[in-house]
Length: 88
Image (cartoon, rainbow, N blue to C red; front, top):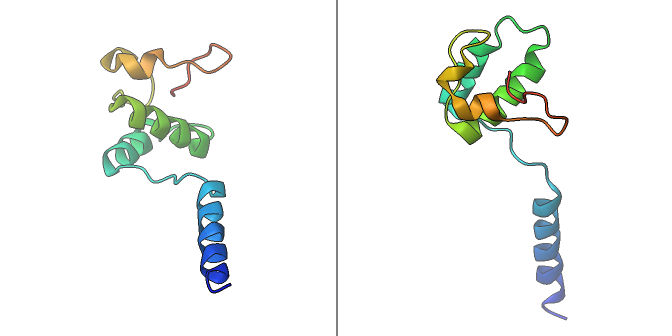
């Protein structure tokens, strides 16, 4: 009976950790590069989101606001589930 409260507390903490959304924290490198890359995007929030995902996985972001994907083959070759380029 003495262990009931600590056990419930521990279970609730573990459950909240498991159900929480993953952190959207990005590295300063990716954040700055993606803001520059998406500076002229029509939907900047979405552009920055996908750029950060690609940057975290690939470790690079092409220069400029469009094109230059040859500078980062991993970034260039990422595809969505529909086969379209994933990275802006």
